[in-house]
Image 1 (cartoon, rainbow, N blue to C red):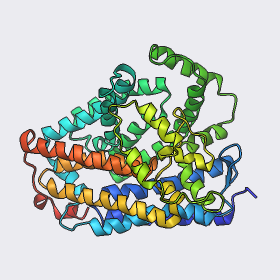
Image 2: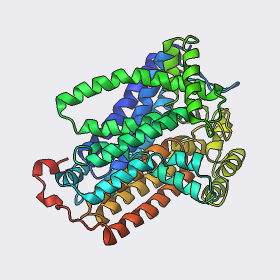
Image 3: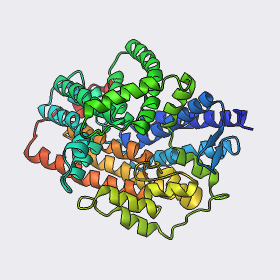
Image 4: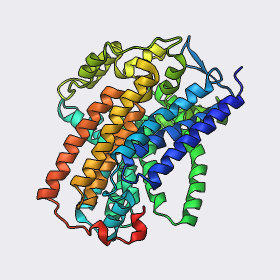
Length: 464
């Protein structure tokens, strides 16, 4: 039976309710734990994407590979409610790491928006420019040491449009630079067939700007956003076809590649109906390994255990600055480390077509719920302590706190949605050490502007 069952519907409602409740606690009680709150937002969205996808396809039977299929009706509560494990762990770590002495994030935003801080505008502008660095590092500059560094900077700034959107009224220069960067970067993304680089920066910026609107304006903006979701997913699905069928050499002919994409998108519009096209667009938002691993292990796919854990941890933490990144990735896939672990669940994985194998799937594939709690507990504890430390060290420099949190969101929200424990541990430590050290030195020697302390902020804002 592959029709939508009431058990699956109930499981989805419970999962959405639990994750929504966790987000509410972070917003109202744990206002100084943004990084951990982002984890709950991610899993809430996963449940909503899944519900939308199952409704669009009209079936609960999903074909994973030539010989592997997943039917959500087989174990709906185990599969769907499993999406609440890591948010619950994040909530516990949030309670342990939160400090009443640290002002809430909205208080920090009020501080930086009450007066224009040139250092903060410079940082926001650098964030905006950095969103184009991926194309510079992959297309125009290919130097063994420099290219990975450029791409790393881009990945660090991936969530920063959210902060630019939150501060767009006061820091108009950075907003203008962001708009220009999105036009240029969007053309490159469209030519390369990259949906995430085309849509997500604008989505993050729009979300940040939405929070600055008045209640009535928010409602109208939300309605407009919901209307735009349909064409966005339609274009996303068409771009998938174009990327598979396109033949123009993007590196030599960017405009030719864009023209080819427009032609192929036009040629393919009559092949499938709108609903199936939208379903393919929504499908790309779902991290399938998080669901498949909960269904297949341990009955059909035995737990991996912990025998190779140390080996994978050491291998993942090898530097790729002096080694070809594709070569390193290819070897990790062959050894079934990191993204390569998806192979044991029937996914087709290669350098040109990797499959996200996130933290939930990583922990469950090793030891079930105990494995998830262990790995998530370590990472969530580190994320929570990192945020507490950042807020304490930069207590008098709220602009640096916000900048660091925007960078680290690319770890707790974005990277956690794609990679397992080893990569996330490495990425978190690199981000904290590199960017934390940079802003600390910058605050000491470069940007020494004084910002009004939280005590001077009206009490009505301190509650936020």
